[in-house]
Amino acid sequence: MTSDFFLVQKIRNGDYLAGNQFVEKYYPLIYQYCFLHIRDKECAEDMTQETFVRFFEVLMKNTDIGKIKAYLYSIAGNVIKNYYKKKKEILVDQLPDMTESNLTEIEIRLDIERALDQLPEEIKETAILFFFQ
Image (cartoon, rainbow, N blue to C red; front, side):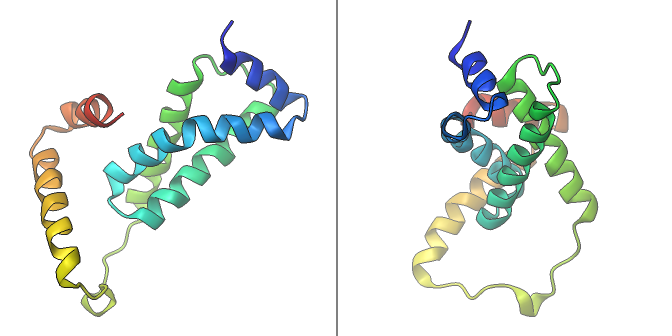
């Protein structure tokens, strides 16, 4: 049995420390997954938190969830899909001001995003998981 199994059992028994350990273990992976899809730090943080909230809701219902990591990615994927369904266009005057130091970082990020965007949808998801997770 894996450490995840024991963590889940402790969480179901009300051990908040185990819940914190679980989040600390998977938060970076789920955050990066969300960030690579959304490309917005705050939004990715919100999505990551929403993923864990949904996970713990299901967990506390004593539902058998199978492979925990895969289940977390599945929830995160659904959160991302819901985001795109609700996404609205940003008005130009709402865009943040850019400084010189941010431009180089942004250019590199845009190059990576363009490369990901050129991939077919059926490969894009796999590429994100393989190269960044």
